[in-house]
Length: 304
Image 1 (cartoon, helix red, strand yellow):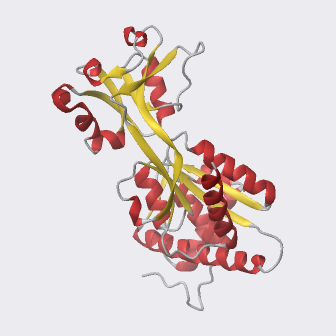
Image 2 (image 1 turned 90 degrees about the vertical axis):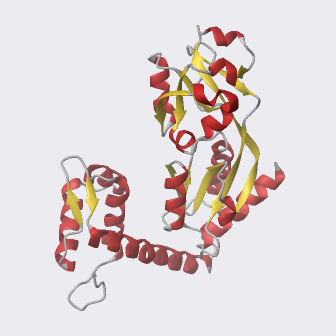
Image 3 (image 1 turned 90 degrees about the horizontal axis):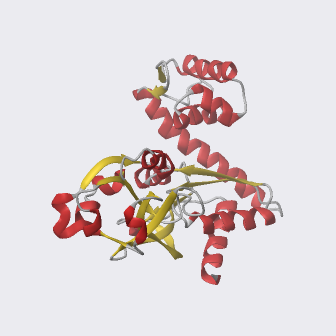
């Protein structure tokens, strides 16, 4: 096991931030961009860290890096150390009139992000020294980032275990529907029934496919569900739709439709509506900035 407290090894917070960013981004080049330093500088810092701790921390592949077992241990510890350092700094800042720090939000693809974006904008107008970081992620990644302390908030859609967290339920909801090419015969319908889609090629979200949501929706037509592709991020799936691969099953207002885009959206009937929740880790110590933003979210949601 790595020992971060020996007299021989000294690891500063900046180096731990570098290591965290490399693990989060998966490549040295992307991490260097995020950190606003050169790639050689970052590589040198990581090599120095490995030398200080006497352990290889990363496996360097041709296109990406991944932590070794000791690297994974350091990653867990680094999250705790950096988080504590940030919160300590924020606590000192809270004694004065200046509110500063970083707030991280892991978010699934949802129109509910319009509310979150408004909350971020109005909060930062009042506290300009607070910086926000938005990480697009599906539910599994978003909850992992929340549980590990990398994210302060997660925006989740219809998440079955949302009660594991403290959360607010947004007044806005998301509705599932079908994106199709503008010349498709189903465009003539105001809503698309599950019978209309039985046997037709479908592009489904990865999570919905794995959890059997599609089969559950289709009921008596479950045996005719024909998922030809799945997606993690819906904007990538738009390209499959444009290549005539099938009907894209996704939430409303996530893909540009109508108005000459070549794509049309129709809601599913019977309606399939999901709640949107903004969650935070129960019992977690929050920085002053995070606590203020949480209160801001709640106040805005109550007002709307």
